Amino acid sequence: MALPTSITLPVSVAGTSDFNGDGRPDIVVTKELSNTAVVFLNTTGVVADVAVRLVARPILSLFNPSIRYDVSVTNNGPEPLDMATVTASLPAPLAASPGQCTPGAGNVTCGFGAIAPGATQSRFFTVPLNLFTMGLPYTVTARRTASTPTDPNPANDQASRRCIVVGPILTSCN
Image 1: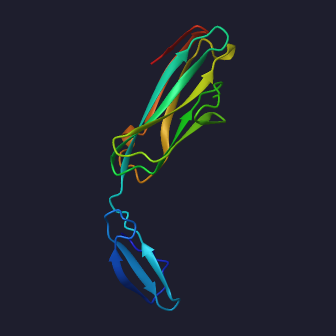
Image 2 (image 1 turned 90 degrees about the vertical axis):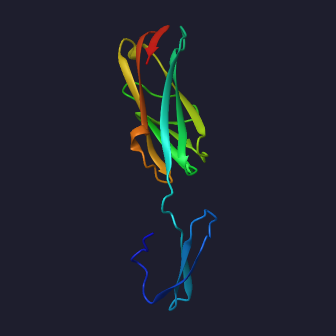
Image 3 (image 1 turned 90 degrees about the horizontal axis):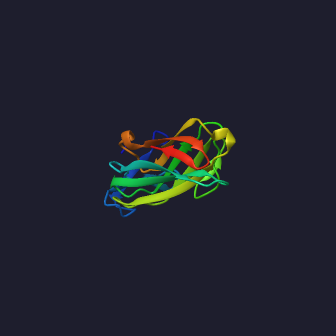
């Protein structure tokens, strides 16, 4: 644990204790001239490996065809995950409809709350299909854009799915 350099002297270490109940000793520093104390929480070794998964399922309909994208976040541990944000990029001219994620210009953002080690949370969004989307392949990529605590393994932070829209009742995703 590194102490910030912005503390003005004189200071003294008043003691250590586990102030937030995470099993790690935290440090209390007193600043004698200003009559204050500062607690520095020990965050060493706090990591939660976020694994992102993306599934694309065509919803075939003559009048309202779409693709439903399911975004899953698994906490591979070892610590609990406080939060994660996954952003899916959408190639033009695709645009998302509101679901459990927030559509933006060319992307969709999915927020996830606390996840215990070994547990998974999922969110979904849909992309309506129209004449402008027919006949072309589209690749949507979902990637972790934020998480707390630190994610030590960037290798599993993104997933992609490629879909080809042949017509309103024929779409293939892999």
